[in-house]
Image (cartoon, rainbow, N blue to C red; front, side):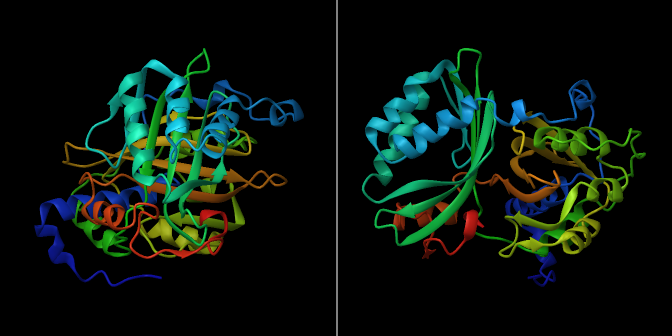
Length: 354
């Protein structure tokens, strides 16, 4: 799985350096061990226990998204796109991280969804692979599938937040990078952060949250920068971790721990932005900054808990591309608009969008 990291000369190529370096940062962010976060509300204020009522509650955001994506085909039909626009708030923001700028306002968002649907209508559809059980907000992992349902291609994650009226007020969508740099990121990250000064470890009270969103908040708002053992305690021995910097997934607690230890050094600041309120699964958005760099990179994480042990059993992380649209992604969408990649794989060959 690991690739050679000898191509350190890429550091001299500014845009590629920026892309690969910050891509590597999100891998470490997924479990948060090197930099403490500030300015985030403490998850201590909410309950750590999950009742049957919580699990059985109406998940408004999840059901709305299922209706729009699976029922109305909002990403591949004109009528579905209009239905999506109908439930957007007047000041809705849609951060399609494939595009250079977000779309702001009901009309702009509706037109954007329409344009996406027109490009793919009759050529392919969007399949939901996993979706968090959120009510006020939720996230879903998706895959592009061809119209004949024989091939699947581009994967990604989308976060959706509702306002009090049940309208969509915020969306962040990030597709996977087609170029996956692998271990090259480790050498580049070490190079750019070599002069960073370590921060003191955080002070926190050990706890065992029982809902997915509380696990994420605990790891990133309290434990981050602390003891690796405390974080790994909340992960299943059979954890599957999809880091879109790599072609292959990480499997098992030992492999994930080794990977995190490799990436544990100072100079990275991770700032979670929005968390959904999922119980058995959760999606949250974040921004990552490197020492000495003015720009940040947006990203997103999706966590699933084992329903019995309440330990994290699955993680998917995806960062945005600093070049928009990304050159390979643009070429692939032009060549195969229903698939989003140059070469697809048989439908069903990647269980759960793996």
